Length: 194
Image 1 (cartoon, rainbow, N blue to C red):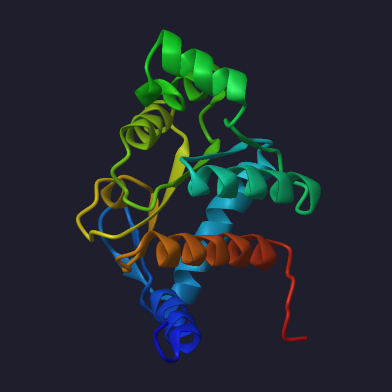
Image 2 (image 1 turned 180 degrees about the horizontal axis):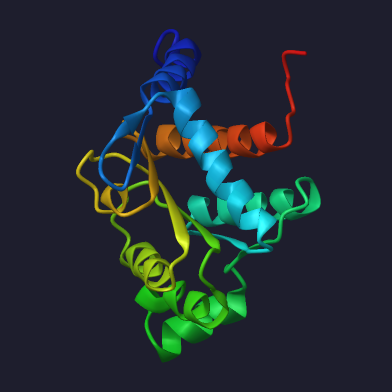
């Protein structure tokens, strides 16, 4: 076992959070607080018009999608949903293609003004990219969370793009989860420090 592994891991997560880059569709970069404020503004605009928040992701990102859809509905009072039902995933994956497991239900349920949160550590998952494209075609607002390669495809596609410059899945996924909770806690005005 490496010496000081825990401390180095904790520092890697802290570094990933402090080095996270938030940009808009034009590539304009925001400070962390300004980016979070913009993310909250987009969310409140959707909520005020009765729109939905949809979360999509694969693997660990799928569990985050489900977790945050639940927290947004139960704790935040937002209408939200993740497309992680096993029957949906397996039927669409089998009958259409796995690349359409998110785009197909978005095309059936999504409406202009809804908010799509696309979570992908690599930023290059074909089903996530197809989901983003469907969201854009429907005139939904899109927020992407990605990591790894700075040139990943998701990072260029959202109205707001949250990029974690880390090279391992564990650090990217942990950082995404912290950022998602930060976003909801900010919307709910929850403050650990008070």
